[in-house]
Image 1 (cartoon, rainbow, N blue to C red):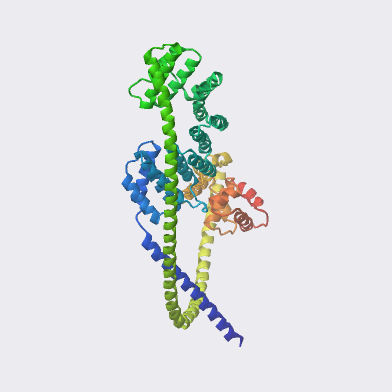
Image 2: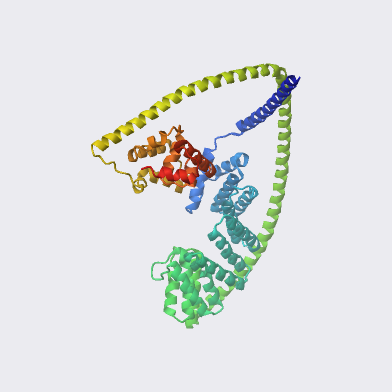
Length: 560
């Protein structure tokens, strides 16, 4: 009675396995359909973003706005979170280059909304760049409090991306926000701190640039000696030279240096630098600095005619009006930004709810489809179970027959293999006898000769560069080198009734070349414990003794 029960149990297990296979096929089929419906040609959109990124890195204006918008739409539907962040970031950069700050800020915020920080591959470097750009736009829009929020996020994600330079820049730019708030003590403290940590990490030029704005601050409060200290640091680190033709990007420093000359009564030098700022190729702000500097110069030397007095009143009036306008603009932009931000958050929540609803409906539809198909296949498979059991019994009989035939073929092949190994050994002995009669001394190869070959260096190079892979031709070259340098190595390994597979012979070669077990594991795609077990088995098969892996290495390395 035991046999029928066993047969029934076997049939039940087979049926259960079949059902598992059916479920697996259904799931794979559904996933395949979804994938087939969602597969698109992404290369044109990748190319658009690559071109925009190159322009951005080269400080060129990004002009292909429409193409980037199409890429954003594509990656929003079919891209990963990191691809969506990148697309929205570059769209923001395009709007920034067009001077459309609100659209740029919105694109950067969309990039932030795409972030998935729970994933191990989250691109924190890209995320840090987004917050850096947002902080810069907020500074231009005179929104210091929002700028400080973005700078903290810029610092946080720079640290997570292991980007020390960006993290220090995030600290330094906080000084700009506090300057808008007219908190000069905080500005001085932050810039001194930034200068110190730039120096600690070897960023000499950045350290020098970070203290440039401090010179004006100290001159304004009549701390000339401290201003001179930072002038020396700035000029040494940036290579400033006031003799050469004025550079637009450094024009502002000519005004600062001129103020310093006025403070120490080097009036001719101050006048020279202010006059350099009257170059018509400079922008309005830089020209204004030149006029203001000359006003300070003439005021210093005491020319009190009516023109100088008018210039003095005009200077003070313009300064007051500018301060008032700036404050009003700050308040207006603050209110506008808060309104737009709340509107944007509301729209995002609405879109997210709609997207979640669509995903739920899609999942329910797929589940219903899977259940319908599963029920159909279940009924069909149930009718075919007995037929499959008969085929199963036939397959087992055929398997036994195939194993018998394979064993017979292996015996025949083993005989041929042993015959070839015997021939190799015989020829090797004949060669040794001839060399003895002819007084030919076979030169023993040294380890140094083996380790200076090109193929040995190739294997070492692959170990040092994990992205490199060994090719079939590399292994063929290694075996050929051993045949040339130690002709009898092959016969020494195979004449001791050892039938080795190709990888076992390759392990012997690597041991002979003094590669470590961990290196051998890497080169042969094994783990170190497997290599140790293989060396113990090879010691028994080749040398006929039981021992440790180190005993095997010693014997192989003595073959020369």
